[in-house]
Length: 617
Image 1 (cartoon, rainbow, N blue to C red):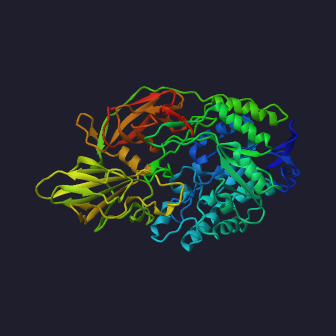
Image 2: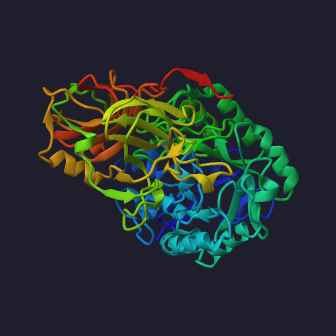
Image 3: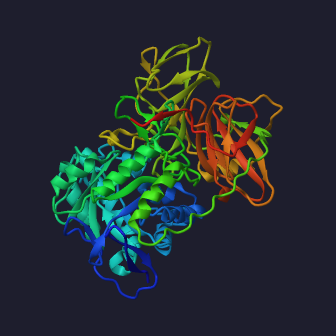
């Protein structure tokens, strides 16, 4: 049973850390005065966010130890519903998604836990963590008390909450607080929704302090009555005073102090000067507030799980694969200037010397992988669906009628002439256009038309549509269906009679592809799009590395069936993080899905290249 002790620190606060040694616990985290208390003693939350689903499980301990050594006393993490319930009624809490193991590990390493179970998490994560199969319902109203949504939430919470409830402080565990939904004041479509979520947590056994988190504009709309602490999120210290005025007899907490910022394809890499960040942390703490650093360690948007952003623009821009966030601990777990300066500040709030800083992971620059064989996209097609009209990705009858969540979808139909192809703005998000397998153009939010060459007889028009990532924030969540979401027209006439191929590129598909005998030798001229196969030989113990793809254009990289994420030459990101635990001694299967060009080899680097930088504004 996990229990706790406390230590008095030099500033007069009391900081407690979980320990397995105590046999009884007192009162949990309380907010009955201007300071939090834990076990009846003053307590300041010095929090840091690390998401278990963005860090290889083999590195959980490394990242948490580094956070603990920086002076952080509380781990905060979101819970991504769309990973834990990939198909309706099919739940996954194993391996990389073993939340109980993650919470237990945090306790063993001396960290308290604030759990943020959603169901909506934002997090720059596809659909803010909501499962795409919810969008099969044409009337779906996400984040409301619409029955189709609440029934799904109830089913998920029936699985999630009983798994985490035993790890609450009142049961001898490290969870000292639980957040109710997330940033609802910025959405605020249903006044009954937040009370519903609160009751959904309480009725399933959540007993610890409840929190909400909103920006300055959203706090009046995102709160919920009854013993819930309002917290804010910001990149400055200006939020502390408004919080104090709003709840004068309650503790002040910045639930998300943004240590950096995310990056979008086609933009620059965002950085936030270490000295500026630490100066604001210092000021927040001087104002007697608690804090959570979002992110302390960002990790990676592995696979197709990145979100998209469309606040200042009508055209969504997808997040890059790296979620480095310019955080104190880098994407690969390296120390930064921020880490060093932050450790110095946080050490003042501990009476005892901080733990030693753990050593770094070794790196290796492997020899380039030479592509040995390739397979045209057209030779890899499996599932086919015939439909008179286009069918959006989520409504395809695949994955046990849960639809397709991520990846690409290929739509094909017969045409009898050339002319002007008009997407009617129904491409979500980007389509490569082919006539008889020859590339003729791109359709996306900017390019709505494409000229098709003239030709005789029947020809096959193919549109390879990529879901680049669903919005994770804003009021358009209900509209995040992907693929072709309506008619496309050729010479003002809607096209009909489609054959639709689902290409979600799950590990099973990639592994079957690797093992198949369909591959062509590289001596034949490759056709695009296509899959390109090589072998990475690892002698000795595998080490972390970064993949570089100069001479390639856009696509996805798989190592031993694991989807490392998207690459795109337009940047800003130019390398992909390849963690050592995903490599084997000896040969490793490398498969790259590439849309348009390759130079035939995959290169490696010891350091990341996240692109030209721009200061966070």
